[in-house]
Length: 496
Image 1 (cartoon, rainbow, N blue to C red):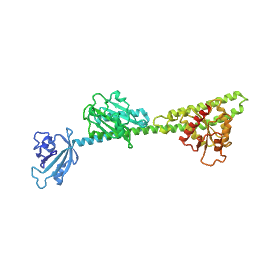
Image 2: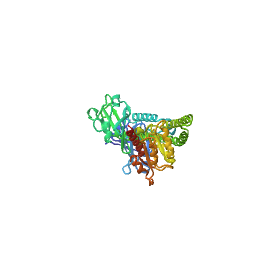
Image 3: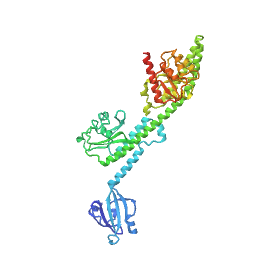
């Protein structure tokens, strides 16, 4: 039988034991020895620290766990022999070897603890470490815990790039360079075990690499591997692969441990992404605050300077030249502040819809926004300047005409966005005035949700305004970017 059984007298001496108990005993003959001495130098772990005494005094059975100096764990169940007990046999002890179960439980607890510590950063560390340093810390922690807890020296972690299906290497230890640089995709065929696991979301135990058609060699002498998916919010975000130079080095229990550890790795990676996103958002908030603080005052300087220039043209060339320098200096100040603000915002973890690479066409474009509403002007600055646009504003049709005419002397506006209702003109009338300066005019009209009493939009369309060159207030970012890009493309096509 797998359990050891011993009869014990009231003084805890063994009076009889079965063969299994003989095998576990440290002495050649355990008969006559104290029960605990029979198993060698041992420590009682509880829950009952005196199970034999408890069973004698209460007449009820008691249990405890003991650990020997050889790190073996035994579960001991002690029961009194009430009716059949003798002086030599007052108690019966049933002993089970629970070493494997206890060690697995300890390993499980250690893995959970390690998982919590993977990306556990103190507040001062968060501010002191940049993004690369945090990722390096996570890699070091993964290396340490996989070697210490999972007893593996070869590990590879890859992260899934959703758009392309590419599995990008994050960490490689013990893998040759050719394997580390290998292009792998989340596909069930032709991309090794890693590609299969990423595609199916299922763990894979390769017991003999030489006989497994999916396996791709990671290092010389590789004989077995274990690969599990990194899963976050029910989505595969990557894989963890561990390998050995021994056939059958891993089993189902190892798979369970690695799956638990992989969940903690996935959460740690997500924590780092959230920290990056938080830092990005904070930097953008600072950037937008800077833009909001300086954009409108500088625009007022530009409006006033252009208005004075209009009066001095043809009368005082020197004054005009000095005012032109003021215009240039004001624009230079704004650009410097804009560049500083953008440099504060890291490019990592930018929301996909706000990617600057998707709107490269906007970089360096000059936009004139015409509206008496300061909030609309501020929104235009905030939204468009993120994408490298230079935004200037005017509060009336007359200001817009002067700004537009003056821009022809330096760098013309690429797009004019004008409200259909201005203090002095309608949007259609402004379009006609600008046509006198340049034709065609790269213009888009904007309106709130309401009636257009002067039929400004209808008249503008009859005079060449494209139906797509229309915006609604308040701005929606995607629509704003789309319309500005459309007007740029249309104007370029018309002037070729």
